[in-house]
Amino acid sequence: EQENPGYYIVQFEGPVEKGWKDALACAGAEIFDYIPDFAFIIRLIPDNEEVVRNLPNVRWLGIYKPLYRINQDYLDTMRKKVNGAKEVQGSETVSVLLRAVVFPGEDLARIMSEIAALGGIVMDTVFAERKTILKIEIPPDRVPDVPSIHGIKSVSYTHLRAHETVLDLVC
Image (cartoon, rainbow, N blue to C red; front, side, top):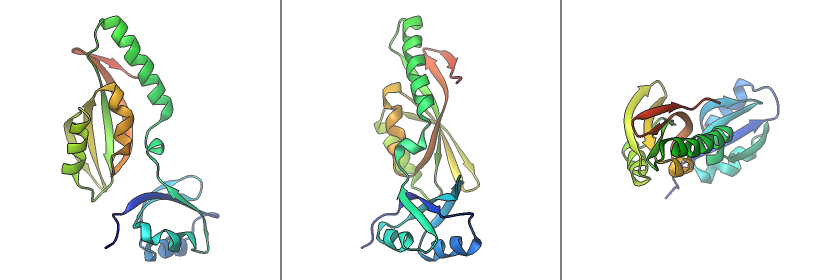
């Protein structure tokens, strides 16, 4: 029985040629976004890692880690804004509004269930070509856990919510 596919970054040794991407696909990789320089986010069954690593023009293959899926500067800014909102509002009831992009083909029901288990609420779902966008309200202390949910491609902030006041999160 094969393992579930994981997400990786594969980097080529120079400007990417079509044949290199074709070889990657033949090795079982599904290619997603380009990342400068000469890299792509891919979905791959872990059993095929060595095959991809050994392709002639591959410089590096590594896990697409949760910390790559969220801007760390935004995370720091969000923490400061949450603390400021709590001081101004005199309340602990602050939540964060997020935009999470989901890779195509992922189990949305499972992802939404995991978000709910973190205390989050999916407020809206937008279906677009090759991705789904979830608009989420979640407690600030659980924001760092969202990128760890399998199938989440990226997470970005939209606002903080303190009581019924929405505070812009601008960096």
